[in-house]
Amino acid sequence: MTNLEKYLLKAQQGDAEAQHDLGVMYRDGDAVEQDFEKAVFWYKKSAEQNYTPALHRLAWMYEQGWGIEQNYTEAMRLYLKASQQGYAYSMNNIGLMYSEGHGVEQNDKEAVKWYLKAIDYDNNYALPCRNLAIHFEYGEGVEKDLEKAFYWYRKGAELGDDVSQYNLAIMYDNGTIIKDDLLAMHWYLQAARQGYSDAQYNLAGMYENGQGIPKDYKKAKKWYKKAAKQGDPDAQLNLGTMYYHGKGCKKNKIKAFYWFVQSAKLGEAQAQCNLAVMYYKHYDDIEKAIHWAKLAAEQGLPDGQYQLAFLYSLQKNYLKAIEWCEKAAKQGQRQAIEDLEVFKKEYKEIESAFNIRGIYLN
Image (cartoon, rainbow, N blue to C red; front, side, top):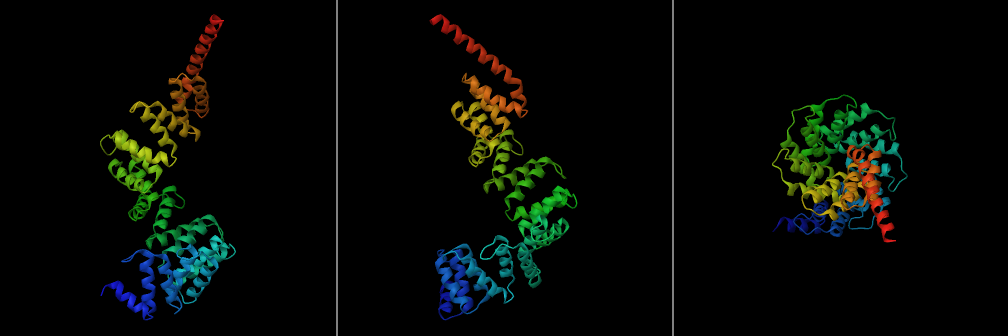
């Protein structure tokens, strides 16, 4: 008899814990095909017996609308029932419901009360520590207090919460309470190891720039790549740049191009500008170069505006070249400032040639 068959037999015999565990298996697709409706079915069976974890997880399914029609009111009812049995996870989620105004009137003060209640019941539970820290950081439902925010982020970080670790690192990085690059790096690293992409990106930046440590381009590339693979457009841009210039690796224009494309598709203006340069310089495709330069320029990137102006000038379209060069020059783009008068002069020469030709033809 397989484990699934054992759980199913016990669940069918009315074992509340087995019913709950079977629901978890269907929710996660563990040893069975993922099926939210079956997960809800077994959670309900278990919850009918007042099994606390099932009450909580059934509430979550109602809140998310997984396998059942979304119903915040029912979710709140079930969370409250579980919380009355001392379930800290439900207390935290009630706080979130109040914070978001889901099933209840939005009320940050009530949210804070429930986070504190969750911590009182389980002081090794990280999520309410993080949520409480956020309220203190932004003064939501409590008076803004960065020292208390720091305290609760540190508590959450020490309990292993990746968001708390990241936010604590940011506070050390920015010197919110105390500036400490090594502690910033420590907590970025903890969050990065858990797969938190923003932490991976910031950690890579510290290695690349030598912030508090010697520069290490190989480690910078390693962490940029981890974040890039998770779809972080800034990390994709920086990874492409490292491949392009050979920082921490051999120069590789193909890999640089690949990561610029990924970043550019996500709307990163500098990556779009870099693609424009590569299409012009390495692939001799001015139309695609213009396409990407225009996307960057329209986002207001000075380098993108200048690149677009330059590309238009190659097509002898000096009116557009001047238009975009002026935009870049107004933002202080050095090459645009230098080339603007050149474009204007070339346009006037062409205009004069057309005027002379026109007189001759008449």
